[in-house]
Image (cartoon, rainbow, N blue to C red; front, top):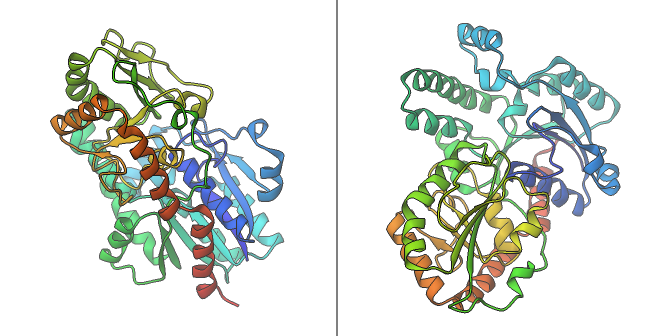
Length: 404
C-alpha cells in the first residue's frame, strides 16, 4: 500500500510529543510493508534539520520539507477575523506547499493520503484535485479547539480572553466542518474518537494510539534501587514554551514540592526543556534548572521518576509512554494520563496536590517500590502500545476502505 503522509512539522528530529507520534506512525507503517512518502512543513518554531537525520530514514521516507511562515501576522489575522475564518488554520496554508503536494501526487499514485493533525487539512482541496481516488484520512492527535478553550478560560486578561475566545470558537467551527471533507479519521485515543462520533461523524473511524518499539530499559532502571537515605531524584523534561507544561510545573513546585522538600532532605527536583528560562525556579530549595539539554535520553537516565503534572491539554502525553517503555516510573495527573488507560500500580496518578504529595512521600520512604513500578510500566506499554501491531491494524483498516 502506498501512503502519502503530510505533516505540519518535521517528525524527525523528534523534539516533542507531536513529532514522536508522527514518527511512530511512519515507522509502524513501514515496518508492516507499506510504502510511505513524507511531506512536512518547516517553520521557524519547528525547522527541518536534514543534517540530524539518519540516511536510512531519508531513504525509506523520501522526506521533503517545505518552509512556510506561521508566525503571527496581524494583517492576515485581521482578514481572517473579517471573513470569520480560523486564523489558527489559515496560517498553515502556503501556495508553494500546495504545489509540492500537487507535484508529488502527479508523479505517483497513492492509496491513502494520511494527514497529520488538523493543521494539514487546508490542503484537502489540492489532494482531491490530483488524487481523486485516494482515501483522505485525518490523523487526529487531539481536539485542537479544546487546548485554546482551556487557554481563554485560564486567562485573566480581558483583552486576551476576548481574542482567545474568538480563536477558539472559529477553530471549533472549522474542526467540526472539516469532518465533511475527510473520508476517514484515525484517532489517537478512544476519548477523541467518541468526540467525533458525538459531533456526528459517521464515516470510517479507527483508534491508533501512540506506538513504541520494545526498548531496552534506561540505565536508571538497571541501577540499584535508591536506599532510603540516598538522593531521590525527580525530574521533568518538556517543552516549556508550551503553556500547559509551564502551568503544570508551577502547580507542582507551588503545591507539591514544598511538602516533599520539607519532609525529606535527600529529594531533588530537576527541570529541563526547550524554552525553559535560565532564571525560572531559581532560589527554590533543591530545584535544579538545566535549560534545554542536548540529549533527552541521557538526561532522563540520571533520575528516578518523571513528573508530568498537567492541568490541561488534549490528546495523549507521548512522553509518558516513552518513559514507561524504558522503565522510568511516572507521576502524573488525571489530565496527563488521559487516553492512556493507565492503572494506579503502573504510575502515580493523582490530581489533588495533597494526594500526589502523599503518594510520592510513600514511594520516597519505600524506594524498593520503584522496581515494581518499572516492571508494571514496561508490561503495560508492551501490551497496549506496540508500534508494529498498531501499524498493522491501521493498514488493515485502510485496506477495507481504499478504492481498488
